[in-house]
Length: 258
Image (cartoon, rainbow, N blue to C red):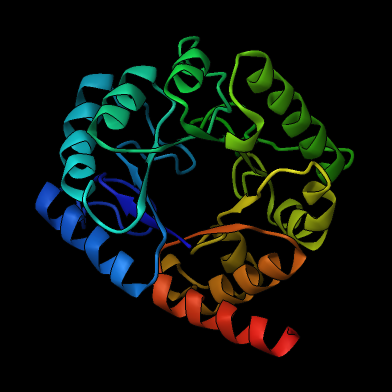
């Protein structure tokens, strides 16, 4: 379980709740108590239409929180595409770099992750958060996302990142329609064929609302359903806001399925 710690004013479901470093640290501690093995700390919203945050501001938001969580019983991940932010977070105790650009956003990122022996999450996204939902189109979304991730895996390996430190994320909600997201989840086992751990983040996302019209604050049931099915189809890491509830659901489903 990867618990979400958004240190942002504008994230789509909890923007502003944990902008204060002490509030974010306390929230992270609560998520670990609820069962999170990883805490994903981010200082820049990647919701559709989000504006880029300057590195200096992202550093100001993220670094105190990473440092404040360094001693908790969880691995700290930094959700950033900027090498300067990733480096500061790694210095502060983080062990994972969760890069929504899959090492394409900053030419220094791949070498940094290789040199620091950080685990790297490579995510599929069309365009940038500002443009990704303009008109997403695929002939076969699963095949195209799989090919992209395979290519980024090779690029990371060529840059010196060890294969055992590379995780892959199909980017649910990042440049996809609701049907694209459902198809990716339906055929997740095909992405598992790439042989690397899969990170899946469906938590409170708009495709759930596309099914039943729910608002972001009303999507716990859809988050649980999609997370349990993703785990059954091969997801290794579930990135969620509601750690206790999703964790319980996965544990019960695992017990039933044996």
